[in-house]
Amino acid sequence: MLERTLVMIKPDGVQRNLIGKVISIFEENGLKVVALKKTKLSKEQAKAFYIVHKERPFYEDLTTYMSSGPIVAMVLEGENAIQRVREIMGATDPKEAKEGTIRRLFAIDKEKNTVHGSDSPESAKKEIPFFFSEQELLDVA
Ligand code: CMP
Image 1 (cartoon, rainbow, N blue to C red):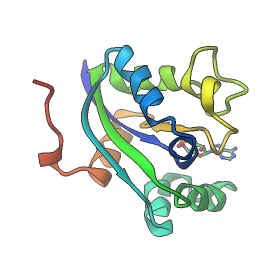
Image 2: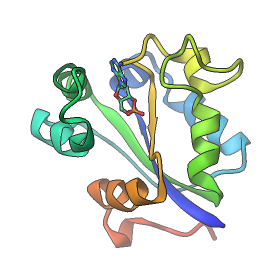
Image 3: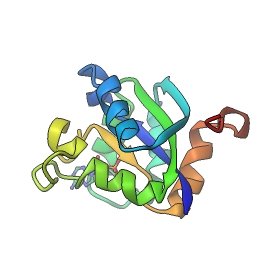
């Protein structure tokens, strides 16, 4: 099924100049960039984005970290894009991520793990409009 998913390059990825490398890995795997922007989340926006984790012990630290510097948000499209992006990113904890995955290659730790990708079609449906209007989602010609 052709799907769209929301990906973020987190502050640790942007700070360490990994934007191009991360996007290349997705593109080399056949995913198409249908929308892209660099932005900075306020603490309130980070809290809203990660609202599903509000009861978790890491929620406060995570939202402080995610609002600490610029991020890059993008919408990627492809066959089974949601699951494929999750596989390409690797496990949340880089120590558990498979060889060759983005998090194994670049993540610092469980929190500063370089990338975020929607975890389900329901999440993608909420996360894409969080960053992009319908007009900003451009089909690849
Ligand atoms: P992400 O895919 O963006 O979704 C939720 C984020 O919470 C996750 O990546 C991590 O950055 C962070 N996270 C998840 N579990 C932990 C944890 N145990 N400790 C710290 N941060 C976590």
